[in-house]
Length: 231
Image 1: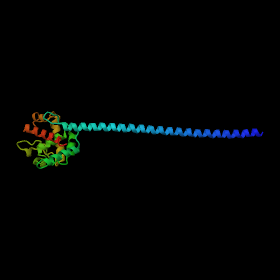
Image 2: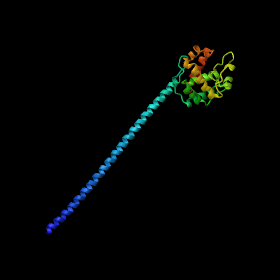
Image 3: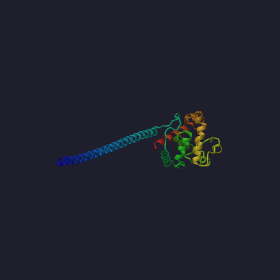
Image 4: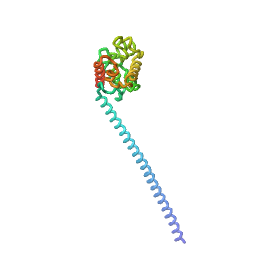
């Protein structure tokens, strides 16, 4: 009986030990599984972060490429009498102000257009005409905004300023630079561009915009092309 009892006691202790060992192994296995799940989550997160960074870099490279192409298109642009006057260069307000500042510093009496880059961009948006052309045309006709007709009538494009009586016949286009530039650009769009006079040559030889034909075309093209070089 004593031997049988001892065997039972030993068996109980052994089974208890085995159970504890199994519990320990199960706990260790559970920890390993939890670590594996955590590592999987971290790996998934790392992959997602890597993919996000890759997408952002791809977008950034694409944007940089488009910006280089835009700047190259601006720098390579040259206006002549046969080029469409539409707005396809996508100039910014800052770029227009940089151009205007350059002209303000290089012209004898400066220009009333200083700080008005946003006005020329707005005029371009509302008409579809190039802001470079709008600036050059206004500069040529109004002596950079300093002419009497421009100052008194807000007429910066010589609209209806006929040779016989330029001041009296010139249309009143607004009370300030902003109104005059936008209203004048809209008038040109409606009365010339929309009627097929889409180039400087057509404005002159089809639409009879100005009497000084060659000088008018050359003056506007020279101002436009010099403006590009200021960027």
